[in-house]
Image 1 (cartoon, rainbow, N blue to C red):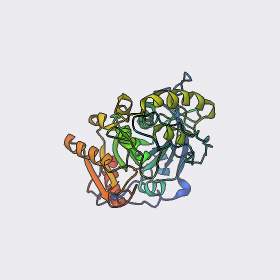
Image 2 (image 1 turned 45 degrees about the horizontal axis):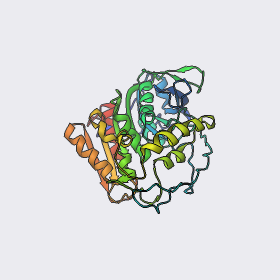
Image 3 (image 1 turned 90 degrees about the horizontal axis):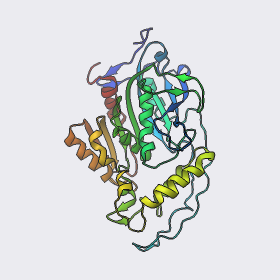
Image 4 (image 1 turned 60 degrees about the horizontal axis):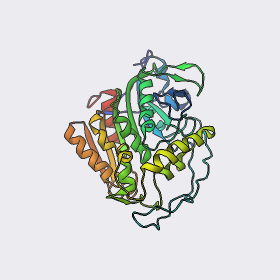
Length: 363
């Protein structure tokens, strides 16, 4: 409860909308930059990740609230073109023809980063946090497309929510911001790329990440872009590959893009993705979340459609089956739709209420 006696309400294991929490005019909104544990853009300073918080006013009145958190490389815009895809007319085992140059992503900045989940969860007594992936939008660093920076970036935000790292009011300098309103219990959610990131964060074993809801997540970049030694493309995107995805989301600081591109796209990716053979190698192994599944402790509610030809259902099925054997709390919602499609709200509500508030069936 807050000092004024206002607190969350639960009925049959679900958090209910509370009138005072639902008053949008009282919501507290913050924009911060969280210090990560890596320097992915090689400038000699730890990267700071752009994040935004929306929380009920009672969280400034003594009520500590859990967090529903989504991270994405898409929030500040994408290349929005297919002119730089690979030419799929290319014989297996031969060097691929060159592809076109991607247009520069014009960074789009929006207040609060994103409005997703806010109207659903803040009225029910949760804070909602969004963060931009490293090297996108106002986050420092480079896009690494499944690389260490992408895995460790959400961990930094969760660490901040638990008082283990620092956040600031600006990307450089600024005043320190403390999440003393947070209970420390975090649930991540997202669809497609945004659904991959919660699984990646969970493989770090970060303390405080209690539950994730990955919807149509890509759990292996090899299985996404390769198949048994052949180059494949996600359904609907012929010619897409790892380096193309890098260009597609590269919306970060224009002054660092050249260094990032030379280091990651033209360096690590150009060699590791190996379009000539399509073989599994160390590059792909490092971007296969299956290899770190034994580190997952967060409760997992997965969702996937059987008719998803973009991220094939096997991406969720294999992770779900493995987690069931490890004893991690795990449920799956499979349906007959296409790419995306979340579990029913009541299902997600029970999941977050149980693992973030610790309420299962009580009122």
